[in-house]
Length: 106
Image 1: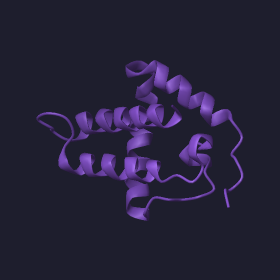
Image 2: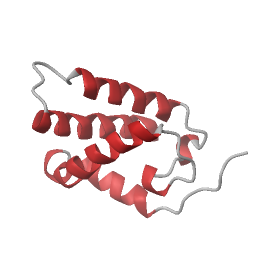
Image 3: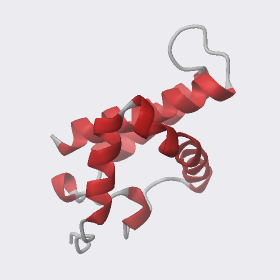
């Protein structure tokens, strides 16, 4: 449930960024598709499971530094635009951001 919403949020943010910065014919460009695939793979391996905090508040940095920089760039651009394009996902993300971060799973 949480992962489904996070997957939709990540996909939406990358789509917003890609449409504005690249010229994809249909869907995402290759670079953005690779970032999307990487993000979903990392999300699928999150040790927090359904208690996963938002990435900015996470105690585990599971992205490689180059990918972390890419996703930060995407989120900085797409985040403010999410409220207009996908208000439900944006509000859900903001509410999740307010939750306290869980302790590191052992």
